[in-house]
Amino acid sequence: MKSFLLPLAAVSFLFAAPSMTIHKSGGSTVTLSTDEIDSITFSTQTGSKYPVHMGISASTFWVGEHGSDDNFDISNVGSAWDSHWGTNYGLEDGPQISRDKDFIPTSSSYKKKENPYYVALPYNDYQEMVYNGSKPASVVPLKPDYKKIYSADYQRDVVVTTAVSTVNYEKRKNTISKIYWKDSEVWTKKSMVKARWLKITYNGKTTYAQWGDAGPYYYDDVDYVFGTAKPAIQTLSTDYPNAGIDLSPAVMLYLGVSLSSTGANISNVTWQFVDFADVPEGPWKKYISTNAVNW
Image 1 (tube, rainbow, N blue to C red):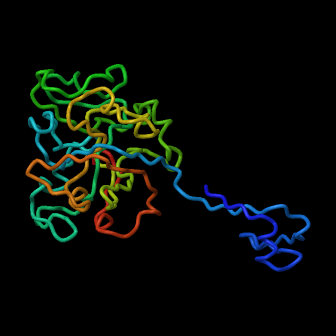
Image 2 (image 1 turned 180 degrees about the vertical axis):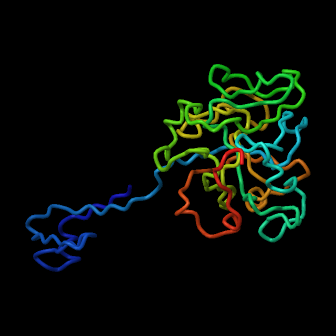
Image 3 (image 1 turned 90 degrees about the vertical axis):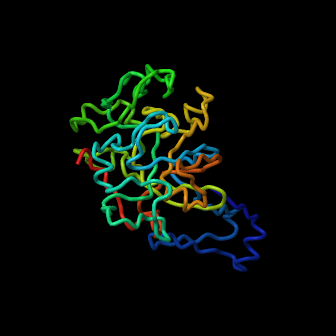
């Protein structure tokens, strides 16, 4: 909110009249004499109802990415909400596959059902998450285990996130109360966060993307995702890159980041939730993902 204060003398000069008529947005008017006015404050609403997260580290991830040493053995063949994410996407969305000028995959295998502009944030609205792997307890879906992080020290093989087995509102986390848009629709068979839109800025460039998966590292970092705290990983660990957001190859490339076969890590990213009505036209709107779960 910005305010501009004009003294009476300035107002009298501007309007050059003993009275002033104010036209209100509803069509009504208010007329005041200059004797009734001490000063006028003009206000313009700026900003957004959603906080801006600045100075965030980001890493690259992609649909169909298999677990390896480069990504802490976390597979992205499935997502937190869709156990067949890779199948529904149609191909492994690797950093160096063929893409058009808008960074959309050119392969005929791409099914055009999912948005290539996607991100992961460290929160999942469902209480229960299912993991396959030698040490699934080492993954961090809940706050009692908040300080555990993905690490080779846990000596597991590959941890694969898959969608929840049932879609039941009663199995959502209590922390859904922090979700800004929690009352905006009926969430039956839908995730409250999947496919939500974000504005992402890096090095003077801005793109838009949809929330596609949970992570990196954490699944209940509600104070960061729906608050103003720093990402938990940046305060609880020194493991590089301590990313607070994962960005798809299309997002990275649009932001001007050069990608190797394993992607890239960048710092000082700014992101913010945005409503769909505030998302401008761009390649990110060519193929739009839905918030359906386990479809």
